[in-house]
Image (cartoon, rainbow, N blue to C red):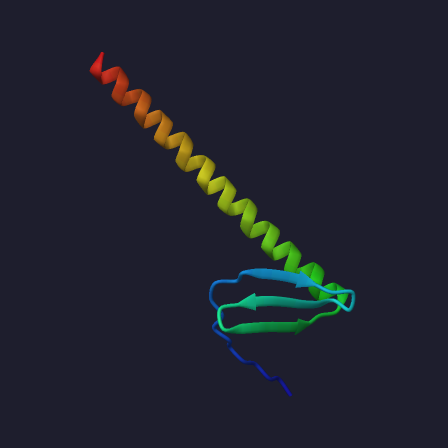
Length: 78
């Protein structure tokens, strides 16, 4: 049987992973505890690391575009 539940938890203020691979998220209004095996923990880490890398790449591209636009604008003024 498959059981799923959506929990809306906002404003994570603390994250802890205990010795038993329980992932504990302290959120506004309480705590969310997720029991994980090692492979699940690794899968979550991989997805999170990939998302962070994607966001970093997007920010770097945006900064490069902004810098290029600034240089172009300065060249127009000269």
